[in-house]
Length: 182
Image 1: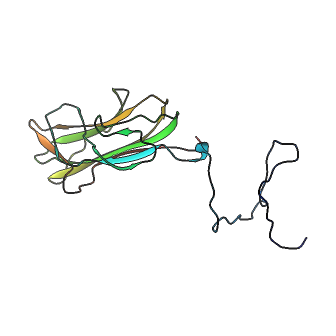
Image 2: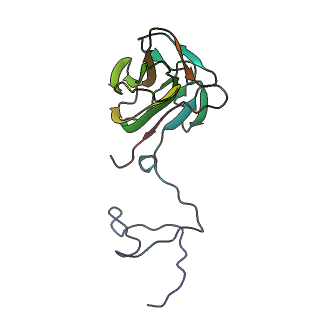
Image 3: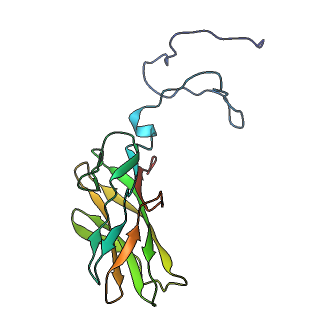
């Protein structure tokens, strides 16, 4: 068969259902000069990323929801900047992460947790600071129904109040995205 260009407006199987294969094993199908539209099950959405616009004071030993009030990304409008929570609207497995820069001098400890539907789902163990600030970060994969929600909480144990940094573009961050193929 001669090489050439195939121009069509629609490709279907002869039976009307089944699999259409483009290329053979080991070959590459080049779509670099065209736009490909993925259906919703092939996209890592909904997804969001949010940061804090200001520092937040944390009292001693209490879990406090972090005020991630500034969206960096919100693919489907599913992150609530006033309640600081993500409700996906689409059931599936999600990678959820939170990262915070916590004032931690004087040998105190800090933690970060992901809450699901108002209850602690997973949290980090105590981390001993090596400087005046410590980073607290967590990543987890969890199943969310369409109406479940997740939030990021932090705590510190110092005997007094400490600051979770958010001002001056310090990237304390909370994010999630749906995992395709899971």
